[in-house]
Structure formats: structure tokens, C-alpha cells
Length: 176
Length: 176
Image 1 (cartoon, rainbow over the protein chains, first blue to last red):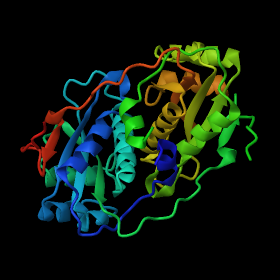
Image 2: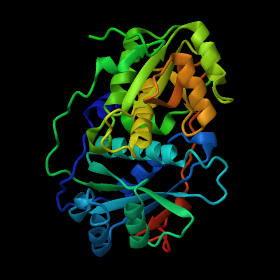
Image 3: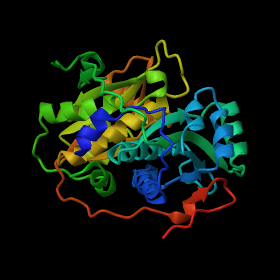
């Protein structure tokens, strides 16, 4: 599948088969994540790859939207290391770019995944940090549940021409 | 190029030829951006596609890192509409996912681009909002400069095995 098709057909997958996700499959996803751009190439992202069932179950209760982790063979905690950060305002954006790469690479590999928001909701971040033992300087950003999809959702068209403006907010591009 | 190759070979491009970027090329990028996931499918993203030279020059001075817009045939202001937002904490992350899609689609299309951070730096946001006339409820997130690359930078390997942990922060995955 070419890249644009992968981007246009990716959807969130929340139900997974019992089939495992191999180390080498996860490796591709982590490499994709770390290929993302970041402000001043700061690369604030850190990853905890969770396969332990008990810990996945605990993470699945860390936010009301993390239920997919209960059936996922792999969950990834994405966090940022704030130690020595030169541009402390951009880690939220940088980690998001890495996660989008990860989800696209998963879809391209025949895997499915769902992005579970953690930051900036403090109780969610607290729960996630405790579940995987993050030190204080490492801030949880998001969770990603990954696995082989039970079924592949049909693509949806999310395009909205009215959200595109030409040269200034007051004018609009004409879109088909 | 397959999706994983596009992810792994994308690099920031800051110098552009004088060749124009067509409306249909920009359309593909906007569709890719809007195909991103967002918290509760909120889709907070809005876009101002800037082709007017004077306005591009003004935007190129809106932050110290926006110089690429001075030679870019197209710049895109990505912003979020905060009106009626159900989950006001997640627009920063959602817009970042959309921008990463846009940059990957640009690379897949033979274009080049660079992501210029705006949020959360208030003076940058103020300058950008003024340059394209954003109303108060619409918050600038980032700028993207786009065009045909003068040269295509070689891929770099940004992978760091030491940033990957297994099951908990205290342990590590062994990576080649």
C-alpha cells in the first residue's frame, strides 16, 4: 500500500485477536516513531513496551478510554523525558508526531492500533506513571494499544472543505 | 514508495525551487491531514493555505524559525477552533497528528516541507494570528512550509535502543 493510501485508510482498531505481535513488528513501529520530526531535533520521546498481561490490565483501567488494552497483546506507553530539555514547550507536539508515525506503520504492517490520550489529564498521567514505574522527570503522554485486528474498519472520509481558508481566515478555498 | 519507507526517509526541507505547488497537490495534503485521528473524533484542525507572497514573507518573520517560508510557494497555517470543544485538552496533540500526516503525504508526493513550531509560544502565536486574521477563538498551532525541494536530504537513522523499556521503566528491551 502506498503511503497516501495508508494515511487515508488508517482507522482506530480496538478489538484484537489473540495472535501475538512479534518483537520485530514492534521494532518497526518504534523505528517509525523515532523517525518523526521534533522541535530542534530534541527527540523527547521514550517508550515502554508492555506485554505483561497483568500490567496491560492495569493500564486498561488507567483512563476511561483505555479499555482496548485489555484485549491487546501489546501496549506502548509513550512518555517524554524532561531532563535537560532545551525547548520545554514542544514535547507534547513532538510525541504526537511520533505516535502518528507508529499508528501509520502499524496499519501498513497489517496491525491495528488505537491512540489513548493521557496528557494533559493529571489523574490519567498519574495512573500510567505508577503502572510502569516512570520516574518523576518522565511525563506520560499517551498509550497505544496494538494487535492484529479482529476486523478491519472501512475507511471514512473526514475531509471538510469549509475548514480550509485561502490566504486569510476571512476567505475560503473552493473545494469540490 | 511504501508507507514505512516514506516514514523512514522523510526529512525537513527548507529550500524550495520556484516551481509552484498545484491546488490538487495541496488538496492531497489537506485530505491527509484531516484523515488523522483526534480525541473523540473532535477534529479541531483548521487550515489557512497561504500563497500570497507578501503574506508568506510576513509569516516568515513570525518566528525566528520560519525563514523557510520566504522561499516556499505555499505555507499552511494550522490552527484549532476552540469554539464548542468537548475535550479542550487535546487539540495540541490532534493538530500535531494532522501535520505529521501532511508532511508524510508531501514527501510521498515528491514535495518537501518543514514544520515550524508556533504554539505554545505566545508571541509567535500572536504574530501568526495577526498575519492571517484569525479570530480570537482560533488558536495558531504550527506553520508548514511546502514546495519542491532544491535537493532531497539523505535519510538519517534516529533510532535509540536505550529509549525503549520493557514492561516497566526499570528494565530495558535489548535492541540490536
